[in-house]
Length: 329
Image (tube, rainbow, N blue to C red; front, side, top):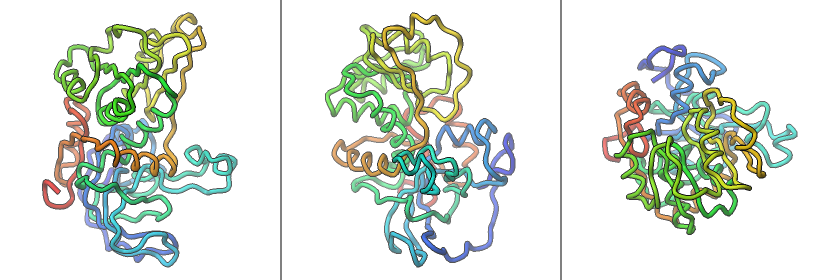
């Protein structure tokens, strides 16, 4: 399924067989691919691809069919392919362990064709083995929602009282990690969304309410997963002095002006950009220990447009994924 241009629906296409992988590349047999809010931003043109048409999808669960002569994985391996698809390795960011900020980075489903497909090509340096105990559909959300959520979570330090704004794919996984580590989780949803609030409490959240509500006590940190800029001053108002607000999305609507007193008291606002391979290795390891429960609503590959519409509706508890193999795999 490819995106012809921003604003247009995805369309099914038959492409010639992909060429044998060269260099470090691998040819993948795609089993499943997570559907991410970033895919919506790409479809809407809020995040611009380097070329069109492009095949979206950056939470790819696959088996390596064929490996190039310099590939770092072998044929037959079950692997995951995340958002970060290539870096130059030579810029100042790459040389300082910040490859997520590489100036020439290429991203899966944006600069490189992604996983809304039966076959895909990936650089073997940017795929990694998947944790045991997860089906293809269950593990797909770990590859972006989990990874970017975990990177954001790391920036909250040792916060005991953690607020999560937007309780979707990322938040429902990070809540479980935080609770497993002994943190107290406070979940914020769209006002009046009692169903998602109940879902958050079922995963162990101590409190769940609307984003227009104040938590019962000040937070030590908050992560904003929703793309609504107006949540930044709301989260700042909810955190105690010295607290941090982490913006996890790749795109956010305009942040409204707010009084300095909300920031004063050594509060911090920061963004999170992309991910690193170290993030992938760390999170997949911890997912194995936590025994994450991922809630996934599955669609067949041919229904990719319907899957995007479902995600856009905000009515999903957890994540959305495309099944390229038989339903239920």
